[in-house]
Image 1 (cartoon, rainbow, N blue to C red):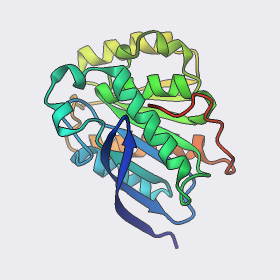
Image 2: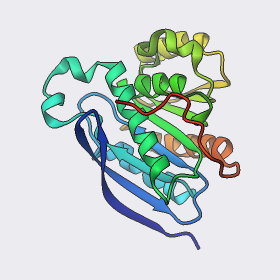
Image 3: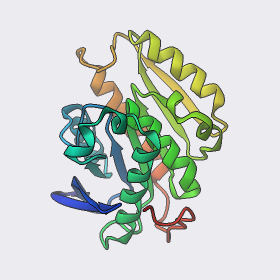
Image 4: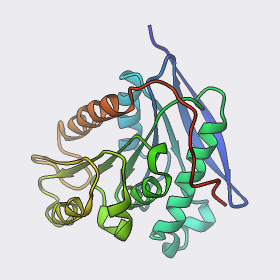
Length: 227
């Protein structure tokens, strides 16, 4: 029977320490790193709910703050996709150095602007990232990096989130990797409607189980250690 152990962690990058919550599943089939959107944090109730659902599916998870409180007070940092992507890369390198997670295949789960940062990080890290899922994301903000993403990418958008849906459709056309756009009927941007977040959990769980379930291997990490 699988067990899940949760602990608080601290991720070093660029001279700062970023707090995180790591859930370690026994005999995990992979590890999903979360990248939250603007105005959110590792304590995001929606991302926490998705993480718990992934834990139940046999996947370890890491939620962490992409910015320090001082950095987050500057709105320019909140939308600095390059900076956020560097933090995601740092978290990925950190997990590769931990005895309990160093052999696991890695997936990224991004929401809002965090989805753009996750895609930029995935483009930079190549085959070291096995899958990406975007929830109500802004993949368009990844710009030219979209064409360089190699990780299979699932875009989840609410059917009522009309503007973001069109942005996701345009971004999907720029992806050359395996990708799928799933529209969740009756869902707005925050997936607050009954049953919509559960559908996110189901679809994300299926995607990550399919893409992360392969034998442990030594990481390539060709992009090098983030600063």
